[in-house]
Image (cartoon, rainbow, N blue to C red; front, side, top):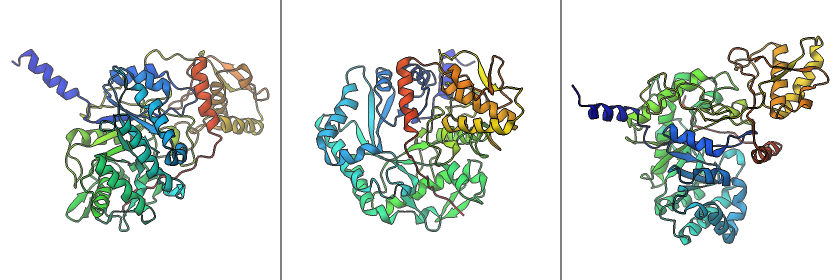
Length: 478
């Protein structure tokens, strides 16, 4: 018989989180959950690292004393001023970094300067301002006495490198940004900072006609052989394309962090819980094995994307943009997920506790309405102001017209916090207290927010009227 302590050590070892696993916490939601409740959920699930896209004060205060390792972010729209105004960089570091470094404060490891600033679709908008911004932020960190501990990084999209043959060994950085990349890469090497890259196998499948579906997952699909290495999935091929590009410019030994990787669950035929679970099961098993890639064996540091669905994200790249969360809008997990990478199959993440909802009621199309063409005009209006990205063929809400209209009415009604005026629709809307959800199509009851949270959500709601356009490009094999 095993001594009891041996059993418990074995149990703990089998349930430890994948080493280095973090999660992206975006907040582009009309009804964000209270940060203190989210932090509690992260800790209950054993998640120890979070990557933010800003340094929102409420979020930072909630992270204080949590022990979570944090990467804070600087949005692209601040790069211009940061690049030529050192006092602004000092002020930003003081208000968003050192402000939280008191005993029992926030454990900050990285400051992410910009977010995918060299995307080809940005047409060079940030090419001249990124590196000066990095230098000013790093200088401010150094002068504050924290530059050795907190590193300045840049989350790059994988389109900063390319392969003319679609083989990893032909990997190289784009010619139009080569000069600037060299400056940044040598800066990383001097400061011992990692190269942060976002890799999305889903987008390789989504964007490329004829892309072999099995190559987007980790099921040992038909391999690609290249320079003595063998690739059975696009994640490994993409990662090693970057390694070749780094090697060719003399910085082969830079550490690499995967800043974003994930799979959306709605908004496209390839987006559902089944395929998302398949992707995450394969990824987490791979990370737990510490097998690395053909060119770099061992542990990989990875941040999953993302934590919650975000109904205020731009849908310019596709409707799936609002459905990357491993949790729903209300903090409930979407599917079983084993963060230890053991593929236990049925382990559910713990949800956010204490979530408060609006009254249990819905707005739907009145059954007496016969002129659906007029009702469809109201559907179009509702969807222009609320999130209808789950509606459509091969999506979770593949519905008949009457039910589509009801879904749109309810989304608008819930987004307006069940304001009685938001269920009128020229007399065609009606309220009901029996859940109208149909199969996998959830008619939501929205989260209830305090006045302060509502204003925070409104700021995101207003932001959707700004033009936010970008297209992600990723390594695509033949």
